[in-house]
Length: 293
Image 1 (cartoon, rainbow, N blue to C red):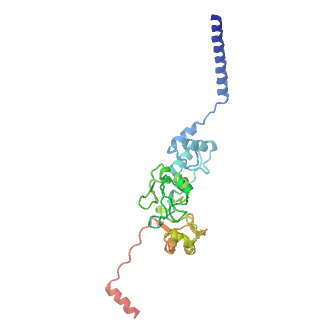
Image 2 (image 1 turned 90 degrees about the vertical axis):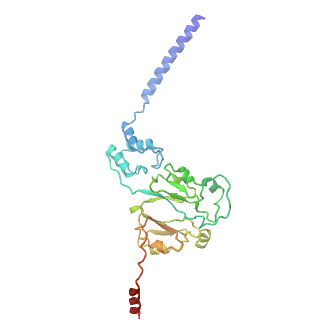
Image 3 (image 1 turned 120 degrees about the vertical axis):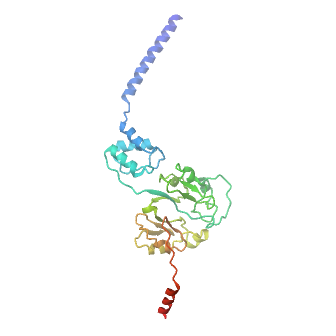
C-alpha cells in the first residue's frame, strides 16, 4: 500500500510539472504584448467611460487610437479639442478641431401646449411607455416625460422640468456624449453645434402630421407651412414630411425664420433681448404729425 501511495504521488507530481511546462509554453507563445503608449493615451482621457466616442470606454478608445496611429473619425466629446490635442501629441499626428456641441430637446409640448388625453399609471419609463402606446397626449411624436434621458446622463446635465414635463439641458454640464440621444425612444434629442456665443436656432418640434392635426395636438407644433424656408436667405431650412428642419452648418443665425413662424415652433437660444423702442417725445410726435399733414 505504501508503494502505491508513493507511485500515485510521484505520478501526480510529474503530471503537474508537465502541465505547468505546457501552460508556460502556451502562454509564452500566445502572449499579447500591449503597446505602452495605450496606457499613456488612456491617462490623457477624462475617464468618463461614457461611450460617447463610439467605443466601449476610454481604454478601448485609447487602443483604437494607438493601433491605427490615426485620429480620423475619432473624437472624445467629454474631453473635447483640448484632450484630442494631447492625444495627437502623444501619437505624433494631427487632430482635427471640432466645434463644441450640446444636446437639444426638439419638443416644446409642455403641459400648457399639449392637452392630456389619457392617464398613464405604469412604470415611469419612456421606453416602456413608448412600447405600450403613443403617449398620453394627442401628439404621438412628442416627449413622454418619463426621464429616460435624465437617468442615462452621467453628468447631471439634463433634467425633466416637473411643471412642463419637458427635459431641460444645462449647457455648462452637457458634454455631448450622446447618452440622452440614445436613451430617447422618440428621437427628440439631437446633438447640435453650440454656435458662436452659444447661440442657436432650431425647430423645437418633431410632429410629422399635417398642419391642422399637428396644431390641434400641440399649439406650438410645426405645421409645415414653409414660411421659414422661404424667409431663410441661406438655404438652411428644409421642409419634409410636414416638418421643418434647420441645418446648423448652414444657419447664419439671422433669425428671420423665427419672426416668420406662426406657431412659435422655432426657438432662438441665448440671443440678447432686443431693446425696447424709445418713446417719442411730444414735440417730436407733433412735428411728425405736422409733416404728415
